[in-house]
Length: 134
Length: 280
Image (cartoon, rainbow over all chains, first blue to last red; front, side, top):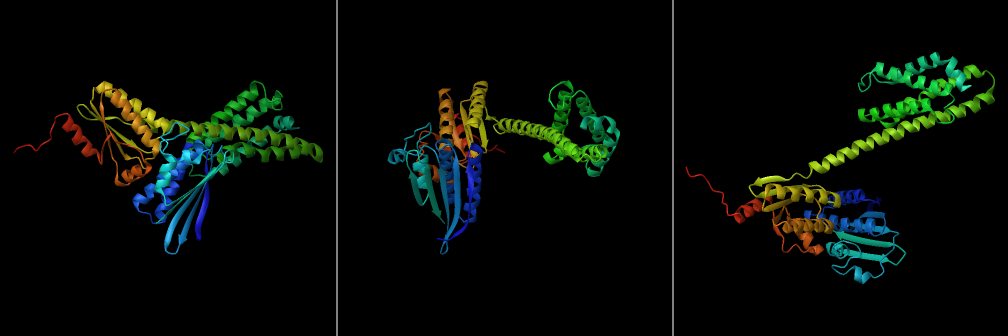
């Protein structure tokens, strides 16, 4: 899939999360996402960005606008060098949290997008990639 | 050499510098008057001379040095408030270099080595003072931003009385932990004051409802119920409803409505009130 354009945003604080939401909303509009699709993508980005800041101790998000034939899509990769996720299956269980949240962020984000991928190992950081097609 | 230059060539340096400051200032710029700019220039240079006379420039200590610092801090913060850029603010100090160096060249004659050594000292000194203006400028700006943030925080969470016994809280913007705290406090306080039975939280102005926002909302609802009142959440738009479902957030047990009007009519119904047309 050819990449139309891409960029990296830094994720360090609560303000950065707000910024990511705004950027993702604009990109989703550019891709021609409907209002519901936009909202889903922005919400998923918000969840993962917060995970990167809270649990990953900060990191980056790489966004890519993709095309495949006539389809347009938006891929986001959230990368951190934090402690990683020791038990991925547990982390993806609804209602389980290692912090004080609802335990729905990671699993919820997965349900809001078309493709979802996690690479993680204890002590090696975490990389979550999501993709949504128009 | 610097000290003697400041003592003997003071008037020349001052006049040249003031002329430069005045010509650099554009005519349409009304933020700072010519007289004020001149007096600031005079004060700064005389304070610099005092500090150099007492030998306090090198040590960076003493009463004259402190007076110099205070003066710079004062004009930097006033410039920050007046809307000058940071480079304009620091430029005030840096523009003096040219004239100090020129005066030192006049005095030194052919002694290039002494001139170079002294130039370095003066550069270091003026850089230090210039950086001080930037630091102060930045701090003043940050104070302005912080104050605005606080004002915004209070402004953005007005608790309004819709009816006897019905309070409404129109939320606008991002719902983070700090805002939720302010909102919850304001709402619970007003509930007690007005002896209201129903609170409506309207989230039409909240662009994204993720799990953290949902969690904050649920906590607020729980707190309201503990106070013996009822809570309705309104402003759940179709896209938000679908997203909440996919996220898996359970809002069952919380009364929700699509818009504020529906929420108010439900609240009136619960209070046993009806709104009807006046019979003609």
